[in-house]
Length: 81
Image (cartoon, rainbow, N blue to C red; front, side):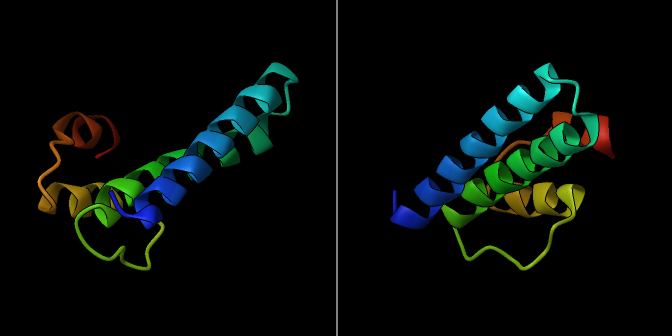
């Protein structure tokens, strides 16, 4: 794996941990923001492992792009549309 997908994944895990800490402290809006960022960066890690990441932030669009790269994200689409 090249370094860029690893960096996206490292950032996603960092955002996930941040969201968890903020959630435990009842800081809801910031917890939600970091949770969304974690998902976005995780999807970008998948995409970057196969091709260049498009400059978008929409989670369903990123999931569609990941699907085009061969990742099965049917459950993601079923849940988030």
